[in-house]
Each structure stands twice: as structure tokens, then as C-alpha cells.
Image (cartoon, rainbow, N blue to C red; front, side, top):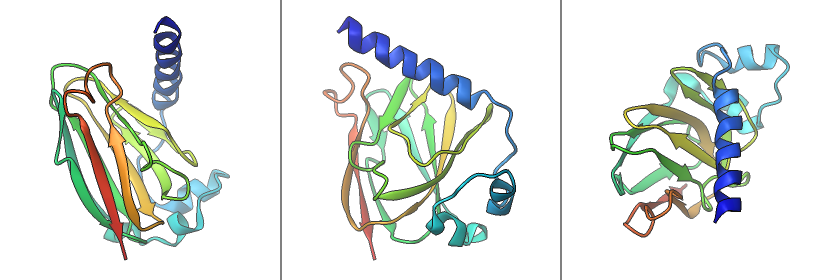
Length: 163
């Protein structure tokens, strides 16, 4: 358990360092390309002016809603809002797979991270984070909160991606 906890805390510190970088707000993909970032073709081709906004609240021991249905090829901004009294995370399970979604960025009030993929998003109480992405693959994909005891208390869900 100690090794798991130490590795988890190190991942959180690294993520916090990345998120803490003062990066520009989520404007256009052209800005990202001008900065030399390589974006997935689905992210570049998406019409971000037509982004669909969704919300999942991370309450104490549940995601609300805990099921989403998304359309393949459509750009989404998923706001993860921690309304609980403790920290939570959203671990992608199968949902954060590189072949499942094309990630544009993770955005919060302290900054933005642009990456090819992520494995989890950690959110402190009363904070929120945006996940900008395009679904690539149809199917049913899972996510959970990996904080000890949270999944066992019901903090898990699924995303259905359809054509």
C-alpha cells in the first residue's frame, strides 16, 4: 500500500506541476499548432465552435450522472466538478484509451495541459476541471474514482460512444 500511495502522490505532484503552468485559454487549435504541438487529426478537424458541453459532478461517493452517451467524431468539453468534501479522481479505466478518445486538452482555472493521453484527472474539493476531446471508437467504456474506498462505495460509471 505504501508503494502505491507514494506512486500516486508523485503522479499528483507531477500533474499539479503541469497544470500549474500558465498556458493560454482554450481558444483555437491553430494556437496549439503554432506552438509546435502535434494534435490528433480528429482534434484538428473538429469544429470547436460546435463543442457539446457536459457536466459530471463528483459528489461524495458517486458520479452524477454516472452514465453518458456520446457521439463518435463530435467535439466535447466534459466539466468534472467536485461538489464533495474530499478529493476525487476520474480514472479512465477503458475510457481514456488512445484509441477511444482524441484528447485536445485538460483545462482548469490554474492552467491547461495538452497531451496525447491521460490516465486520470485529480480534482480537489470545490474545484472543477474540463476535459476537451473527440470520441473515436464506438462501444461502452468505464471510469472510476481510484481513491481508496470510493469505487467500492459506488463511484464508478460508463460512457457509451455511438455513431
